[in-house]
Image (cartoon, rainbow, N blue to C red; front, top):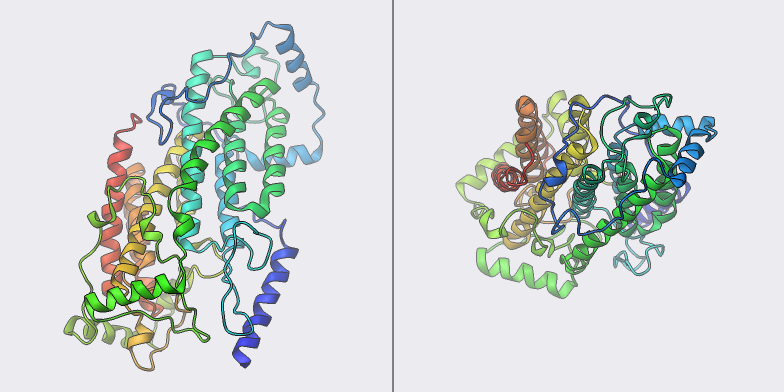
Length: 511
């Protein structure tokens, strides 16, 4: 009873922090506006993810730069008073705002990654999308939810950028600093046409996708999109009609992706106790073992048991990457893995403990998928990618990560394998044990898929990506959360997922 009261107290405290900090978002990466390493003039010909053509969302041809209306817009932009707040926003958003929207998505995932507290009677409430502001707040941004959010955001951004690039070079309206050489843009200039504004496309897509996924943040996201659009004027890189066209295009793109999201199976991923019990019974009949949650009070249902049935992006089906069964508890292979965990229990080196804690990615973090988005961001900046090329990195990365999550959750609830603390008497972890089955390791699967995909895009960084994936995997063994065979199978499945995603990337026409 004392444990229950303490849990309720803790979650109440976290709720207070949650509400009081609703506007407090970290800014993430520090980077200065940079000259793009390329502008991808033919990017409008790349194959989109969901769009059937680059003109599926129609935007009208722009007015001529010699028209009176354009001249009026130009003068309004030129005479705009830029205050200190505008200058801060110009510096914050930079000339590749897709980076900031990725950070905002990660921050939201961290903010909403809070597991619901038990009721006084020991039962557990569930977030309700129909009433997101009733505790427990919707969503609970656990790893499956977070990787899905990143995937929808980034794939919609990529299709938005492909369509924007198509129209830019179809209409070829020059940027304001090319039309008038006296204009001093706040960012390094380039020859990319200005209509429609790619920044406005990104703002609209990101606002609408994230507002659907994090409905309590609609006002915040609107404010960020409005701020960014004002920045496009304050930075002296666009006129109003560029932004209006970009916003219209972005809204249309978001609707297409949100339609897919409405039918991808996520609404059925969290199940009743009856369904959860049936999955456990099937595994017990099939393999002779079952996972059960070790919390007290015990949660009757794990996290998203049917997430493995969600619609995939690149992998043909979960069976194509499903690993072979794990060893039976008590077998020689199992005992070897259990002995390894015992050898670490209470005997971790400082470096092993550091790795376990750094990759813990528990409540209040942006989860393992967030870590890999941060690695991608660092390399986008390092290689000075333009917004279109950046969108492609995030899109294929997050398609690989979500497909990895779907395949991992398929294995988890198909095999329903117990965690170490369940089958090793008296064993203690240094981390909290997640509320879902062990086999395969999510960290390992997410990380192998991400490392494989990013190594394809940034081949010079392959050694570092492989090292980080291996470290992420090992961290779960050091933490006592997984057996080695959980992790090895996850790495193998994740690598296969990454390779499927690479084949999709190779076929999109980008070089």
